Image (cartoon, rainbow, N blue to C red; front, side, top):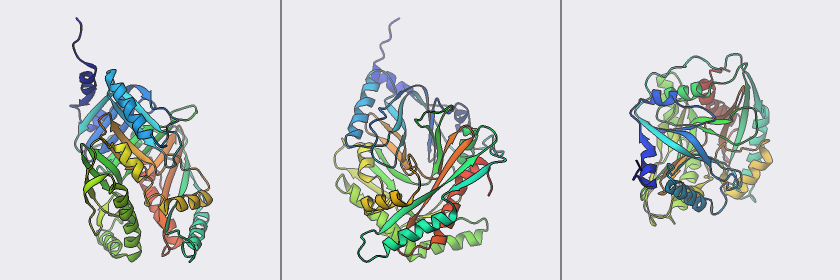
Length: 404
């Protein structure tokens, strides 16, 4: 019997509201053959055969239009018409986007998650650069920031931890631990390109929404200004209130909120950017956050168009962005790749949700590379920035079962 289902109807059928629990959905995830993205109790699993988006696109001009055209073509052929994956920090670096054959969804808190035992016992951890080297890089940035003839206002400097473990890392167990630790985070696991003996997976739990589009509704929530959490409730609250009152952190945050406003203003109407930030918490950190809402001026503007207008924000690069990027290239002894890029999904209608790729790690067999960064402004202290990055590493280290 010949089916009368059109390709577009079949595409909608492939976006399944799954009846299983998030834990059951997680059991279906396999690194190398799928992708995972969780947001506020909504969980997305991409499965089946995958069509890669042209890796040469990167985030160059025209990328958004090209991806949207490819998704519409995929939907016309009966595919899901949705892409899942990661975009890099630097323009021109290959994208890691795929159009999956099928997308499954589940809703609700993950509940009890199996695989909570440490998965990286006996690990060796190598910092890159060492803490002293990172402090020296912050000091070098401060010389630039405090120079009267330099326009640099902020620069975000990162560092890495390279972790080696005796056996292959169970990415699904890491993902499960991230979900259990912070169900409100944007939790993700996506495959990355690159030659090697096994899958290369970007996995993490980001607290920061870069931008989301649903119809004409636009939301963003930039974060800047951080303080580590504490197990003692009284001390934890004291740290939160100190962050809220910190002139240094409030000034740093204002730069980011202003930049988001400036990026969205040409594309949106009814743009609401609160005058004062609010406190947001993850499992390991307190953050200053500004929830932004707006309405698209032109409904043809896609989530990728919005992302291109906003990325990189001062939360991951600095101000002015071109000058900050040059300082990052001078002082960071590594290429960021997908760290501090964007991770999420977009569809053929222009909707999408993109988180900033932070609190993250790249996993390949027995090797894991973790990234953490801190915003450096004129009032920064090198030792404090070392401590901040150490606290931010805790999200991924705890998911790996590594203590240090």
